[in-house]
Amino acid sequence: MPRTSGLFRTERLSAGACQTDRTISMRSVSRIDEAREWRARLSGSVGFVPTMGFLHEGHLSLVRRARKENEAVAASIFVNPTQFGPSEDFARYPRDPERDTRLLSEAGCDLLFAPEVEQMYPEGHETFVEMGATAAPLEGARRPGHFRGVATVVLKLFNVIRPTRAYFGRKDAQQLAVIRRMIRDLHHPAVIVACPTVREADGLAMSSRNTYLSPEERRAATVLHRALSAARDRWTNGERDAAELRRVMRETLDSEPLARIDYVSVADPDTMRETDVAASGALISLAVKIGDTHLIDNERME
Ligand code: PAF
Image (cartoon, rainbow, N blue to C red; front, side):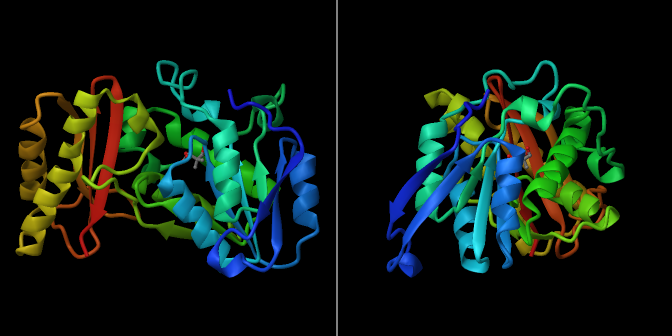
């Protein structure tokens, strides 16, 4: 459970190239009324980065981008129970609120909203966002109810923070498609900004769950990026047959004994529907279990 950070201010001096001449403080709140009060004072643009904490460079790149593009920046840390299945890792999801607070402050965040579960889902809560076809395949099929939980909490967070722009990583490509669909369908005014996946030096996409990997599993996990790169190379050399690209990904993944394939996919990035022809813009994605850890990755064919 995320520890309540309470109400305190983290004083931060001259962090970031464009902020050298002023003292900036990040406010950290755990209650919805406190976050609303912060928001109510602002008339300019607000960039928002929702997270589940245990931050890495991927999250921080979103905060920095939000900092560049908005007058104020908010981030949330909330490990959202409704997006975890009963046998998933909610209880053991990694948490480090003190480090997260420092990193957010250094990255230029103005408000950290870190509510407890009871704030977000008080007794009697019963309303959810029901997603359709975009949420059904791939991660949606593997994790029933996952995107219902994601869409619900994102909308609830948006209703508190009322962001002008909200920043999401491309690593969670289906999450991005689901949120874009929801925003369109529910006429929400937030602009969704998709940001590049940040990778380790050996190509592994950054993820809070990478911390679960043993050294041997960590080495094996590079196979995800290798499989995507193999398919990308074929595509760059003119291969447009989606079945062939799926085959290439499977072949590479099968070469790693520690990797068990959940799916490989070549799909439309907006609808997540599988495609026969990998046209420009197609999304190739895969999900693999290494040990007990579920890892995903993707690339756009552009
Ligand atoms: O991507 C995540 O970390 C989560 O799914 C999100 C968007 C913060 C919702 O809980």
